Amino acid sequence: MASALRVILIILLAWYVIRFINRYIVPALFGNPGKDKTPPGPKDKEFRKSTRQGDVTIIDYGNRNRKTDPPDDDYVDYEEVK
Image 1: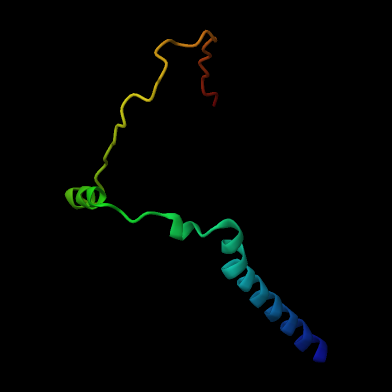
Image 2: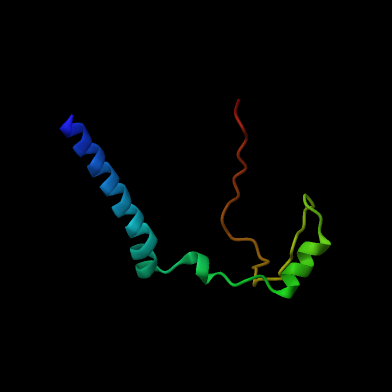
């Protein structure tokens, strides 16, 4: 009986040590990703108000220095085999 109680005590102690490490040590070493995010600006709030839930929106950020010439490699068209 004493050994079962000892195992449960060790498991609980390990649980609290892991929670402490995840809550305090990891954010101190690697930064907290939740605090790094900037709050949405007025443009984002206006965009969200103008769209309904379920609508599909496509945002085009313009030309991102894409090459218009195709590469010199061969194109291989794969067919699905059933």
